[in-house]
Amino acid sequence: MEHILKLQPEYFDYINNGTKRIELRLYDEKRQKINIGDTIILKKEPELEISMKVKVVGLLRYNKFEELFEDFDIEIMADKSMTKQELLDVLEEFYTPEKQEQYGVLGIRIEKE
Figure 1 (tube, one colour):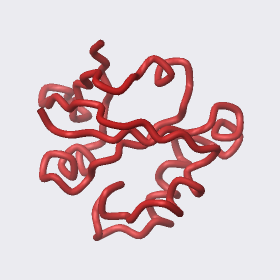
Figure 2 (cartoon, helix red, strand yellow):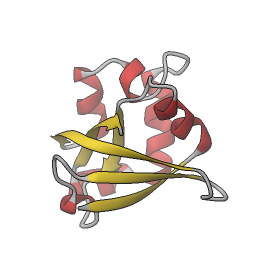
Figure 3 (cartoon, one colour):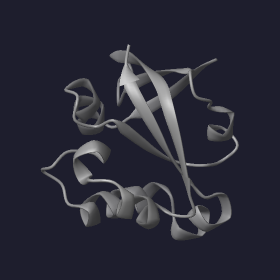
Figure 4 (cartoon, one colour):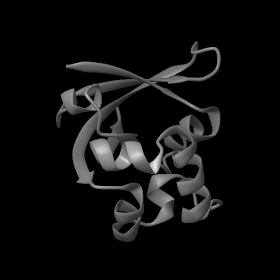
């Protein structure tokens, strides 16, 4: 199955340059359809004209991002130029702690195709 996800430019670039290998999302209805072996088309915001395909090689379910962050280094969730707290702050702008509690979160392990 193929899925489409939009990414902010810096996170798109982290995946493109090979540092970011786990995409972080809320485990809502849309992401519950993602399975290992699926393809994700990542579209770079804001124009959405640049895209790349990645393959889902693993799925990591957690109750909240903070718990996921305990198990992985920042280098594979974003880039070593960021701290885990900075990334957590960004994620919570999109996914409130209440939403994380409601749905849980998903780390999507990806490889560029």
